[in-house]
Length: 281
Image (cartoon, rainbow, N blue to C red):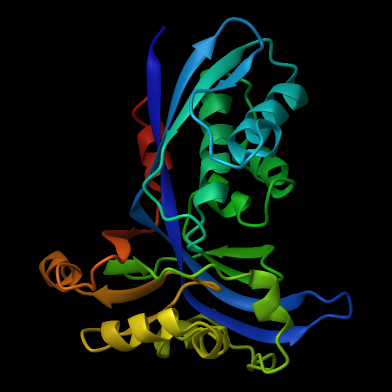
């Protein structure tokens, strides 16, 4: 049986502003998502029985809690598909980096198995299904760079410049909930139109709190900003710098501090997953 390989790309929050807090405790946001041409890979081999088998697993994560497994079972159950799959993942993205690794994996499984199993769901149906797995999964399912508002559910396709990025992961584990609960977090940034936001310098309202609380993030940003505009993505822990050309990005990456993991990638306004899907008959 043939094995099919699909990309599971990272994403960056090019900017992130917190414009208010709702009565239910959720925060109102304005953020810009863009994919990059670097990520994990998902390998899928079809089965003629209904078994979903993970060929490699994440240490400390039960199979039933693994987003890859949950995505496959969800699609299988919702469509009454009699087929199964052997699914593996080649991990390249840093764990806990805020670049969407788990959400991207789940989205790739939904989109790829919908194609391979010929279950015939639309991207919108898959996105709705993906929302039950995680708030960012629909972004990866739809596969188009987007401006998000509200609590992240209002999406407008967008075409930001496809710059080159150096993305680095400090050795920190950041709890997103603790950042959004912090009393000093900015929660009143004025709302702006997308045109206004794209014309202004990009920033991240979470960055000051994260830098105050996590010295390794602060140190790495202080180092990166010597070379190019740099900031936090989401609530971290990954930070990134933007460049106009690949050569300059790779030159700076080669200078990075020892023992800091990361990668160089170019922004993509259409997900590499969707470009790969177009190659399959």
